[in-house]
Image 1 (cartoon, rainbow, N blue to C red):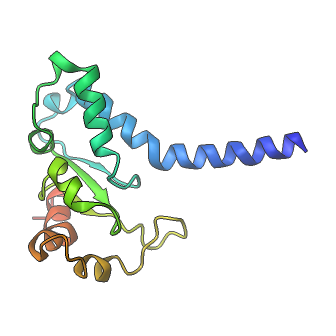
Image 2 (image 1 turned 45 degrees about the vertical axis):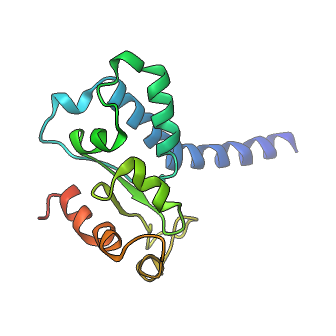
Amino acid sequence: MYGHMTASFSLLKRAFAHNRVLPVVAFRDLVANRIPEHFPGLRFGFIEAAASWVPYIWHVLRRSVRADLKHKNPQDLFRDYRFWIACEADEELPHLLNYIGEDHIVIGSDYGHNDPSKEPEFVKNMRAREDVSSAVVEKILSRNARQLYGLS
């Protein structure tokens, strides 16, 4: 019984870590070590982890990096370091936009995968939101992704 439970729990832990935690760790390391400054033409997309972790990691960076943190405003960091974050339609977007800004957040429906992030009605759900302007929703659905992937 114990061996079966251990195998089951390790699968669950690994799936969460690979999909949700590693992009957060990468973000922190990229900022703390100023890696984007060495690659001025490179754009970074943080996909498959939603976006609600951004306020947390900004807090961590302000406390752990302190004097070495070049940016005093998270929106400046996203702009200067060319970071884009994929969001899910049911996240607290008005709050997240205070951190990420309206130009660095992209669609993240995971459409086509049969996992918890799959959201086939992402576009419909985003356009139905009343707490985010339609102009910002359209940026999330189209313009921002074109910038991230160099399509515009």
